[in-house]
Image (cartoon, rainbow, N blue to C red; front, side):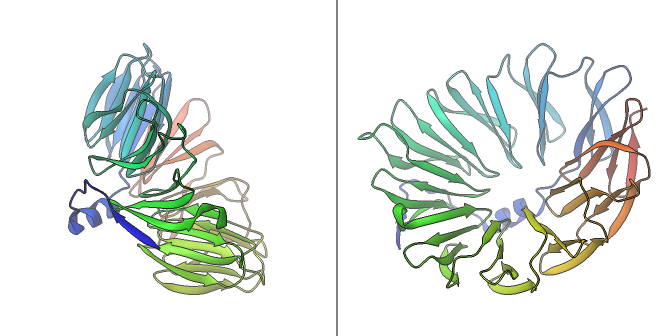
Length: 368
């Protein structure tokens, strides 16, 4: 494995990085009241943003991006409303970044400031901390990270990019020479020929992959590569600095904090990973793994559940809306729920005729 320093590296302050990682979930959501006014919910405070319904919206952990009724592209972030453009072709919202296109122009909104990344971007990929795109004019694969632009690969000879596998703060890509490169914390590393990679998945601080011809299961974890299993797992999924997988013996396992743990010797009914949690079913019990601990959420596997950061929300057999917050289970509504969403650390749910509630920090807020 070779490691290359990129020419332009932004110094990374460990304290700032840790702070950013720990506070990525904010209490931002929104209401539409009975008069069709759009009100943002910001840590228990309501502020009217629009008096007409919005055309589209996407909520991230730290921002609310939307097209207003006239098509203007706006972002509510850090208690302020920013009007970014009079129109938008497309936009993507992650935990910390917003990337949007005006025709072929690619722009990014990062911590209340805007920057044009490219005037001719084709493919674009957005993670929590990284934006990757192919610049069609320069024929280069580029990345935006920590307010700097990096060149990942020069594809002038081929004119096209080969493949990008996006994570939250890490990206794997196939370069113009056929190698699998990894961009992580301002550096590029070479993991060998891509033709030998049978499969791979990318999360936060981690990449799991199966390498031929031995089909051994490996992990790139905080910059180091190590073996997880000698045999290819039957399935695997990655989250924030952990890998969950079903091994060749049908055991459910987790690799986390440089340790391997067998969660169950019985084959799970299912398992799913998002951010910091894994939910799974065992003998009709609905369970969750979070930071090395397993909790039983319900004696029934729900038909409808959602996950974000350390939160799991689901509807139990009685129709009650329940929440797991990383420590405990609580019922947040006994109404018959029509739909629900997780916005950062808030839970927004709809019931009845135009009734919307937001549950945040142990309190319920209504749109009446």
